[in-house]
Every structure is written in C-alpha cells, then in structure tokens.
Image 1: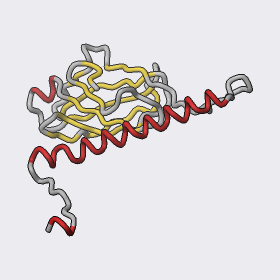
Image 2: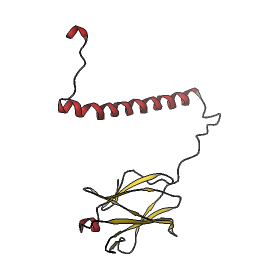
Image 3: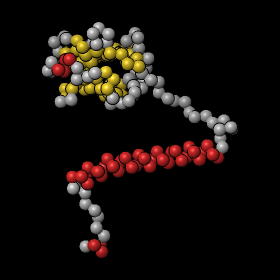
Image 4: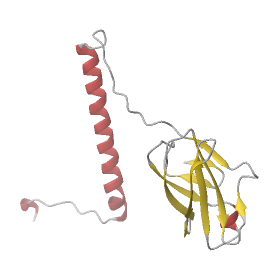
Length: 157
C-alpha cells in the first residue's frame, strides 16, 4: 500500500500493537546514500520516540516497526550525512486504527436459524475463496513454466 509518494507499507491500514514493514524510495534513496534511519513516534506528542537503521535494498530502504498505541504514526528519515526528509517540515503523519477486540453480541431477535445459516454460508464461501486463491498462487506458476507433472496412475504406466 502506498500511503504517500515514495513510502510504502505492507498492509492496507496501520493498526496499533502490530508490526508493519515500511519501504522508503524518497529523496535520500534517490541521492544514492548508503545509510538511512527512520525517526518515529506516536501521537501528537511523539510518544515512544525511536530511531531504527533501515536496510538498503534494490527496492529502497526498508524497516519493520512495532506500532504502539496512539492516534497517529509520525516519522521522518535521516541519512548518514545529517540530511533529513521530513516532508518539507511537516513530517509524515498517518492515522493508526485501534485493534478490534469486541466480540459480536447477538441478542434474541438476531439469533435465528436464518441468521445462523447466513453466517455459516458466508464463512464457508470465504474458506472456499481462500483455498481457490491458494491453489492458483501455488500451481499456476508451475503450470505456466511446465514444471507441473501430473501423477500417473498404475494403469497409465
């Protein structure tokens, strides 16, 4: 997911108390520097401030960060020469969502055989879809490359 130009996360949304991988291909990467660190904190007061050295790859600088509690994830980047990429003094600020912890509570009106069947049916369909996607991801490259061999039965030998 690209949240802003040259900054990518490996998730659709930032959720507190989870790990996120961030990739940076901004100005410092484009200047071919060797070392970049991410300076980050949480909330409007920049709580839990930390600096992490990012790993340089062909796809940019990357780091894995544990998102703490807070309304926002704030960060900027610094190279080994003391040059900063701080979004023109504004820093990079993105909202953090709370982790969903509440359980689904059904009252007597909602607990009916029809609702239970709908929930069960949607659950089964989601499992079938996940299985189909897994099979496509696993076997399609083998079939395309010709590395897939069908198992022969004893009669076909």
